[in-house]
Image (cartoon, rainbow, N blue to C red; front, side, top):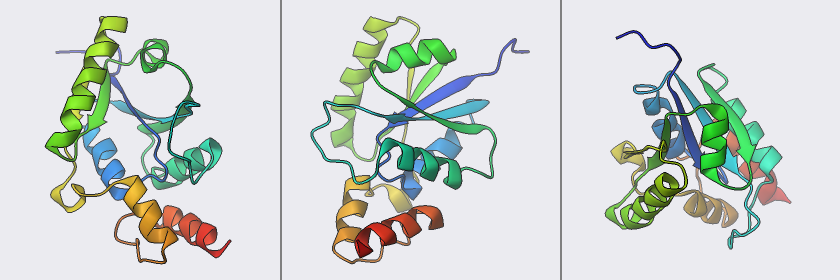
Length: 166
């Protein structure tokens, strides 16, 4: 089967910070997509305070994936389906760490499909080494002086260490 256009997947999230679990899901998304766009959400309605600004999160994503031109980044506000339509994405990638994630993600996938019938969501589970990992846990452990070097790439670790020193 010859495709007329590349398959584009959008992997949205707050990525505050991007973890090795996020990296794993993004890289494995390339098994079904030619291009993956890591879309950093800038959402004014988020209840959790962000450790890093959108610009800092985008920089970290770019640094982490600098070795693979098939993984890009952007930020977005508003509806994910609007971004997906604008970028010509065929899939939205969502990571599922545990069964408890599924209900929320399933509802979001259904809503996205209601908003844009072309919206398809693909759920991926991270490698078992990262199945327990969340950005909020990394932030907390780092804030309390714990070693998070196994959970984030070097550029992210450097930024977390700088924040801890402040």
